[in-house]
Structures are given as structure tokens and as C-alpha cells.
Amino acid sequence: MKIIVCAKQVVDASEMKIDPNTKKPILAGLERKVNDIDKNAVEEAIKIKEKHGGSITVITVGESDARERLKELLAMGADEAILIPADGDYNVITELLAAAIKKIGEYDIILCGEASTDMFSGQVGPRLAGLLGIPQITYAHTLTVEKDKVIGERNLGDKSVTIESTMPVVVTVTKEINEPRLPSLMQILGSANKPIHEWSGESLGVTPKSMVETISLEGVSMKRKNIVFEDASDENIEKLVDNLLKEGVVG
Figure 1 (tube, rainbow, N blue to C red):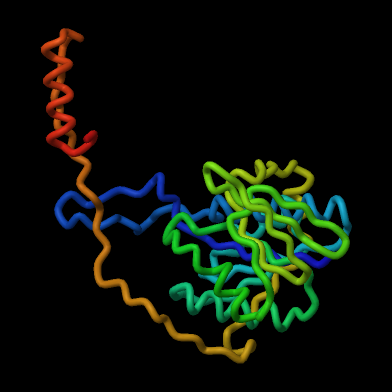
Figure 2: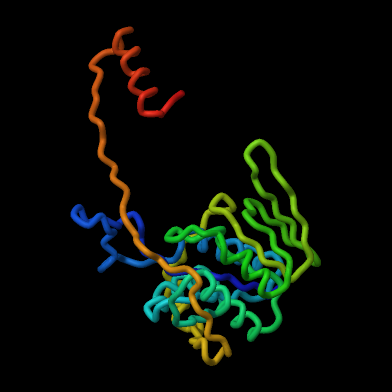
């Protein structure tokens, strides 16, 4: 089984702060990490490999320092990694990923996280399937891989949908699908011997352009009303309900 996982390096949103004067997010100096849901995709790839054998190739489009993040995924259990140094929107990313996958040639399953925590567009998996001309299963929270087919289950709240596809196939997974493993010390040390290839857009024969222009990026004000009701008297309960109705919280 030849498995490809598409992973992205993102800023750690939990560490992000907003400039109180400009309302702009302060991105300088922020730590970067592997997109959380992409780690779920890597974990699922490892589980498939443990059952069926094969190899796992991780691909990322990003800055050169993404090499350090790729080492984490190699330590988890991926066999090799490919870094494509570039920056851009999902159009740029998917065209570069598709070109890299075509260069790899043979593959059975392409796994992606359902979305990245920085943009959360959910575009990469479906666009990749379109560019490659292969089926897709999106938002899978369970995945079963058999010899000649892949079965994914999608949770729709009050019901679930089961989707079956032949291979090759693109599958996007949700965070609920598994719990990513923590690599051991020996796995971390061993990852230093696993290859990280660097492919440029020029070597892949593509020079994609961004289709989305970011006009502005501002933080949302989170000021609290600080209305306190000291006790649970009938009068205070009535005031609380009135306030909630006025704010549109209930209605």
C-alpha cells in the first residue's frame, strides 16, 4: 500500500495575540507547528501501513524551516518526506501538491486533514482530487481500508453516511478519527536517517499563482459586559433573561 499524506506547517494560534491599537494579529516570532488535523492523517496512514504494509510519504508546501516539522512526522512513522518551498493560497498549494504526486507516480491513498487551523478553507483535499481526476471521501471520522477499496464514514449529526471508493482515492479526515501517537526517543533519533527531499515548483514544471488576495486581517473584540447578578432571586433571574434576549443570545 503506497500512502501519501499532505501536511501543512501553521502558526500556533493558541499563542497568537492582537495588537490593541491596530487590531492586527501579531504573527512575528510565533512558533510554528504541524497542523493538528494533519497529524491525525499521518496517524491513520500509520495504522493502514501496520495492517497492510507499504510506505508513507509526507508532502508539505511551505517555508524551509518546515523541515523541522517534517522530522516530527518521520519520527511518528512516515518513511520519507518531500518539502516544496513556496507560499500562497490553496490554489498554489494544491497545484504544487498535485504536481509532486504526479511525479511520485504510483499511489493508493492520499490522506489530508479536513482543514488547516490557520485558514480552515477545507479546499485542499477536494481540489487535489479534482486536479488528479480521482475519487474523494471527505470528513471521514472512521476509515476502513481493504485490499481493493476504502470505506469512510462521515458524521452528519443526527445521521451518518458511509462512502465506499476504489483506489486511488483522496481522503480527508476529521480530528475524531484517532489520537496521534507520541514518538519514542528511539523513533526520534531514527528519524534523522529518513530522507527529506526538496522539490521546487520549477523542477515540477508548475508556476501557480494565488487566486485569493487578503485585503485585511483583524482580531475580533472580545470585551465582556461584566453584568453580575449576586443571587438567584426571581427578580434577578427575570433580569438575566431580559438581558439575554436584548443581546440576542436567546430568543
